[in-house]
Length: 161
Ligand code: HEC
Image (tube, rainbow, N blue to C red):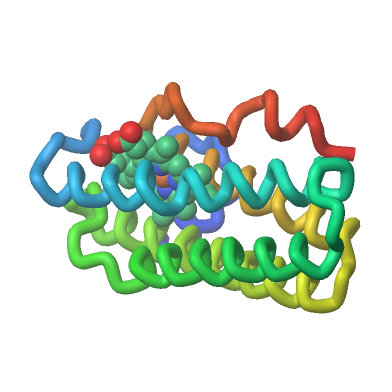
């Protein structure tokens, strides 16, 4: 049953997989919000900008690569904190499973992003960023969050090739 709920939640739009209550704002939630706002979101935002427009903005490809590598490594490190987060914003086991499933899939994708950047594969980096953006959105959606100031919105997705 748990597996089913999880598979369902990952496919989205399955009402049964939604957590029973809206997450309560707690100090731990605020800490998670801070990680998102101060680290994950800015790193993701800069990466998206540079992957899609970097070639026009930065003259030196080697400098661009170094910047991309450092941003991706920073993003991966912050995502790593999600993998061991002690207080996912849910009381239920299913909710926890969903949280950590999203966290580990976004971690893998960020690893793929690092490889794409290392291999100078801009197309693959762009595709991976799109998958990452979807996963950010899916996790927020599952926890019924409306992230207004997030860069992960239709504006980012629609810029993708
Ligand atoms: C595993 C689930 C999960 C993933 C994956 C995730 N988030 Fe979040 N995010 C949350 C939760 C939970 C909150 C709400 C925290 C709060 O209410 O304080 C949040 C809040 C945010 C906020 C609002 C922060 C604030 O307090 O203003 C932003 C911005 C954000 N996330 C960006 C991102 C981006 C960008 C990604 C992908 C690179 C991402 N998130 C991936 C769970 C996730």
